[in-house]
Amino acid sequence: MLKLMRDFIMEEDGLGTVEIVIIIAVLVGIALIFRGVIIGFVKDILSNIWESEANTEIDSGSHIEDITGRSAP
Image 1 (cartoon, rainbow, N blue to C red):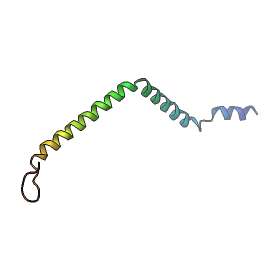
Image 2 (image 1 turned 45 degrees about the horizontal axis):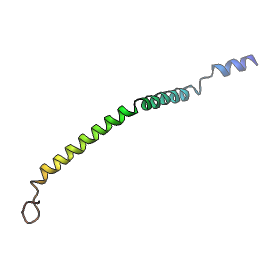
Image 3 (image 1 turned 30 degrees about the vertical axis):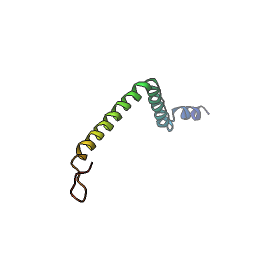
Image 4 (image 1 turned 45 degrees about the vertical axis):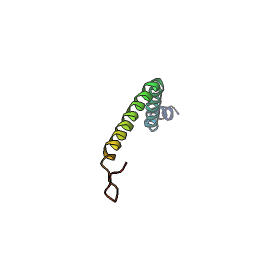
């Protein structure tokens, strides 16, 4: 009986799963703590992307010609 209990305590089969759960819990905690900073960072990046795409479309739009050869408005 003592050997059975010692083997059960020394068993490490579920240890990998526990480590993954702890890592995920820590990452979620960090994300919740820095939620405002992360949201602001993502908003800044997305606004820069949208602004650069809008500027590219405006710049390239002035050189577009339709089928008849006239410049598009």
